Image 1: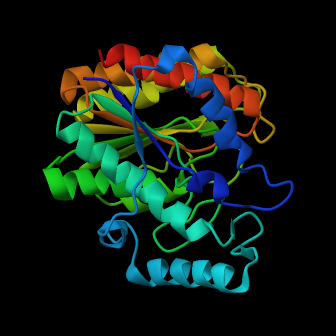
Image 2 (image 1 turned 30 degrees about the vertical axis):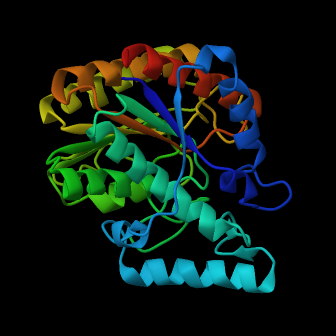
Length: 316
């Protein structure tokens, strides 16, 4: 049993335009770190273009949203230009394939973990997903990659109680929106407030299945760990998940230009360890992590490095 890394060259081809923080260099920076010999034991697979990918997208999004995203992608391909969905969210000619492969990476990760061919998995993908609401693309995101993977684990493998834990600096409004009214879906998030997208207050609780832990600008590892322990890990233990998914955003790093938290690599390592302990206790160590944010290349690469190393260590 080992850790599975899933990625694909199409994630670098997804072009967001000059000066956009969610840029192809993010993939290249991570690639350099994970190419080191210390990661040689990783099982590596390419994110697929699956025949069932659109069917699985419909687990989290209505057909009207899927069709709308397809039309924008086709427009970008047909006109060979960038097409803006909003001020932050843009499709290039290569974006539709990247978006489908990002979803496919999560689905493949679930398949491999459930089959016992990997203990856990990290999906190194673009575009990210946690801001994509039920019927709205926003915040660099087209489809809710983590939510789709979680719902797929339930639909395909009978994982009745599924959790997504999110430590991105921005609140995952999309995952929260999709999970909001289902008591068997757990969403927990630490994030900075106030900050885009403006959601994630303590009183946003769904049907008792949403657990937000907002942090203040300038908070560092001590505040993060306390909030994560009290507001996320304790209710996650009580929830007793059958599968844990991580929305792994690294823009809470102190170097990141889009956030104001002060986390360092050791904090992401600690959070990964704590989630792995929960998975060991409740769900046969099943963890799938999907990349979200992280926009300082050095901070991103080093943080992904310790995150993946921790997954490898707990998966052996």
